[in-house]
Amino acid sequence: MSQNATENLLQVKDLTKIFNIRQGLSTKHFTAVDRANFSIHADRPEILTIAGESGSGKTTIARMILGLEDPSAGAIYYKGRDVTKINKKERRSWFMREVQPIFQDPFATFSPLKRVDSYLYETARNYRMVKRDRVDAYIDEALHSVGLSLQEVKGRYPNELSGGQVQRISIARALLTKPSLLVADEPVSMLDASLRMSIVNLFMRLKEERGVSVIYITHDLATAYYAADRIAVMLRGWIVEAGPVEDVLARPLHPYTKILKESVPQADPDRKWEETATLATLETEEYLRAGCKFASRCPATMDVCKTTVPDNYAVAGRTVKCFLYDEKTVGAESVARHVQGEIPLMPAMT
Ligand SMILES: Nc1ncnc2c1ncn2[C@@H]1O[C@H](COP(=O)(O)OP(=O)(O)OP(=O)(O)O)[C@@H](O)[C@H]1O
Image 1 (cartoon, helix red, strand yellow):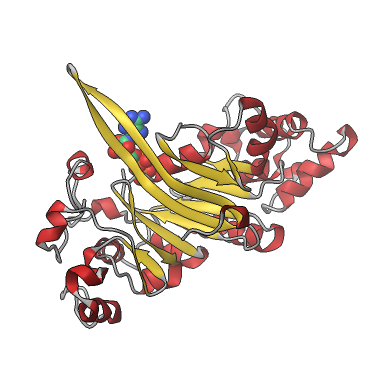
Image 2 (cartoon, rainbow, N blue to C red):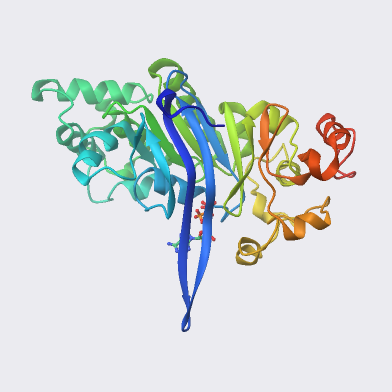
């Protein structure tokens, strides 16, 4: 999923986060994100989904991109510059304009005691986006692009608006700085199913009409399939499968992606993966496991998986971190048959 740094809007290179967790007198090192690699091309705005069950490292990646968490290793290039190394002033005056966050809980973004429009005026003023006499029109334009208007919003407090409206206002506020990238961490998970599509449709429109790329972190595979161009599936800090969303979700190759897909009933997009019996709750144990982190849950485990970490193998237009796609381990014929789906990984599911 990576290209040359100068061609990229964003390139995440071997990005790693190790948390040190004190336990009594000793300290455990816990790798929440392990050498993540992906990029977004500068000339092709896109929606890139990062998916995976709870605790797989999605939020930690988002926080590192936004500068809210320092990486332990690796680099984040934005427009060719490693933004893990820029100073605070540049971060505020340049990077924070260009890359805007959208958070999960729209009501946590705004104080219940402040009128929501005051946030919009504050952002427009702080970033000096337009002259004073143009501010109202500028804010109104941003609100129009999310299906609202200043007239509807002015003077209102968050509790006078619906969750969907408040999330739209937080997106309008992000648009005020004219960003090229939105990092949206579970932006629809607190909204009613009926409102989710309106937010993902909005992301698609922003991509088409304004050329804004979106990193869309979600549990909701249905909206990811509908809206995203590419997907990176995470498991315990690893990206285990990454590629075009219609390839990866229509015909997943990694056993973990298969289980994720099968565990979300099509008719009920509200149901989350972690509610299914097939997914482990032994989060920390899996993080610290030698070999493949999915080995204990995988229906296709081989001996090598228990001792050795698989590489990322390029097959069928994507990368898959699984020995089933390593010719040296299983042979070229077996790889080809797995890619073709001739060898069912999980007979009951295929
Ligand atoms: N500050 C921290 N200190 C220690 N461990 C942390 C810290 N932040 C996150 N973690 C751990 O890192 C792992 C990845 O967490 P993260 O929030 O990135 O996952 P996630 O995929 O976003 O999960 P969710 O979907 O539930 O938000 C988890 O095991 C979490 O407990």
